[in-house]
Image (tube, rainbow, N blue to C red; front, top):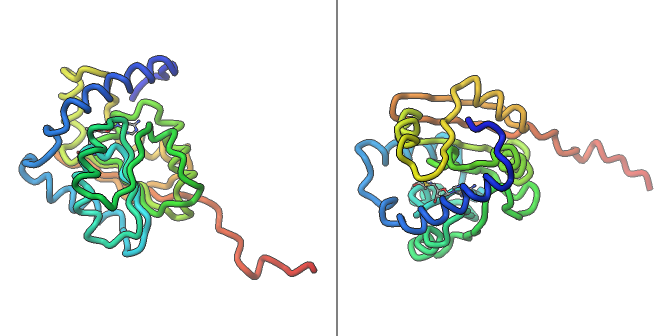
Length: 219
Ligand SMILES: C[S@@+](CC[C@H](N)C(=O)[O-])C[C@H]1O[C@@H](n2cnc3c(N)ncnc32)[C@H](O)[C@@H]1O
């Protein structure tokens, strides 16, 4: 994981990422490595997504996860990314998706407006994890689910770091993921760290909304 970066360093890394991903849109389309599609299917299933729920795909890229998300009949799909060319591709492929060109830490949707958030193959790219997780906690409803995944596993990032043109964080091990997510209001309910598959499912631990019986009519 990254030691604390300055705001200037974060901006610089985001700028490099934007340039890189704007240039590499086709690289993120199929064909995928063997087994990766099945792991993406498992990733979406692990969220417990139900028909009618509101979903966000963080760092959507070309929207590889959206094909799988659509099978569950969500009411809304939002996709956020730093790269405008990635989002252009998403709009061509999935006109129903609402796209947001921004860093996830700044996504200005209303409080409690999402049921499920996916961060697939993008957690290592998010430089301001504290502000991003705080924003996701705000955006998710009580018991909303956050899924952090990588369909090629933690070691893939270790290798990628050796030649990536910008800084990447390694993916946290179980203790690291539990600690980080708990500090930001999430409880980890599933952790899987296979050689080629990383999957963390967490839910928000927001307090219960007051029930009708707690509202005494004082008039
Ligand atoms: C490795 S690609 C993965 C794309 C896609 N999720 C997939 O599985 O193919 C990472 C994407 O995350 C985006 N990204 C990186 N940092 C981000 C941030 N802080 N907020 C939103 N998107 C970000 C990049 O622009 C890039 O398109």
